[in-house]
Image 1 (cartoon, rainbow, N blue to C red):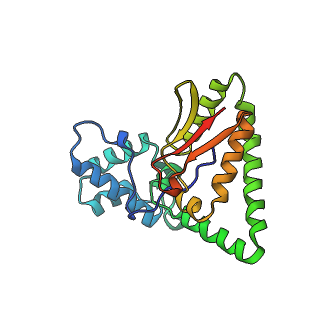
Image 2 (cartoon, rainbow, N blue to C red):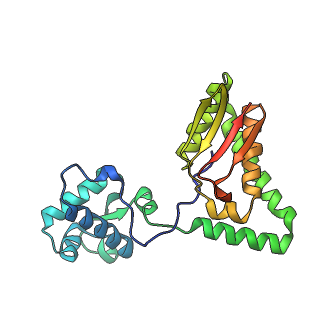
Length: 229
């Protein structure tokens, strides 16, 4: 539903996509690629030769790892002059997707900012922020909400899934449910219930039928569950 929200913070190591490691590849290759991403992150750009020396592997092995990371969309090659002078050299930098593999504390930051907004400007300011967010999402998603209820619900579930909600539309005993098995902004939802209330209102507006929330992950449930219709 929502613009990609907030990946949870964990260790400082990047999380490589599972598909990045071909079947049968030695675990050490995976470790070398993770270390390679960390080195590029630390230095900004790095040549294949520099990475090979820092990792203690051969230049061909480093280039093979870099090719794999390029194919996975995690790094990109570019040409630059060292210090702005000298012969151009090929270097590698993290792509936007590569940057996203490093943990971010977006949820904690967002919760902290909202806390300051509430203390400075009052409860009404939080509601205004949530209303503005809901309006933006409504404008973006409404054009997709065509067809019968099942079609609209399944499209909404797909949008939510793409944003990290692990969501699906399910039918039980003749009733439709929207089930979300992950909350990508869990800390924010726990600190500010207005977020969940705003999303519930959004679902009602998009689907055009009554939507009742039966459980919330933020309250300790294993899933957010909405009865639709």
